[in-house]
Image (cartoon, rainbow, N blue to C red):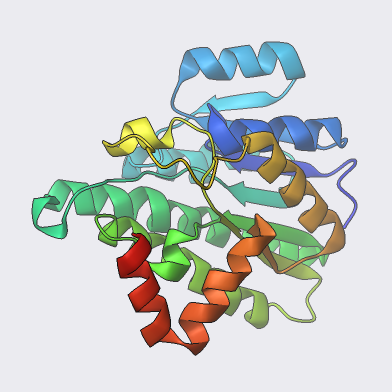
Length: 250
């Protein structure tokens, strides 16, 4: 689809992938509305790029409801929705509190589904649009000590594939993005830094460029970096071997 002239709604625009996507879409000619929690970062984004910003905490049900019922109704029809906002928690499952689990489900699953459900009728009526959901390699492979996070991102990936099939022939499509390690504040917020020497984290701008390219080409899936398709394939076809390799190198 043509990005220039479209209206794009981007969550998680305060930092990381969301901020990079908001900038990349604006540079591609879209009218961008960025949602985030960090008001100072949002203001800086608006001042430097012209992106319209809305401070919203997607974990808060009342704020999501107000966004859906009021703010979105006042905007131009949304042609592109990019769900980037996400939250991680690094700890054994036994150390996840009920609040931790609920927070992960709210931000990583419920908010993207609610926003998608809101913008989808208009997209279908106009016969054009794209929803982009940023999942994670953790949602494909499963990562020890990130069990709940992996589950939420896996749910988002499966939701994306199912909805894309459901919308076949409508002019509306869904893209699921499966990034590996990305250089964002995610790791410090999840409770543990990224301490591996390999693979090196990707810059969020690279992921943003891949997302813009996927929208313009109507791609249903993006795996970045591309070599991650190898462990995805290995786990799917030879799970026993993959499990042994994971234990050896994990």
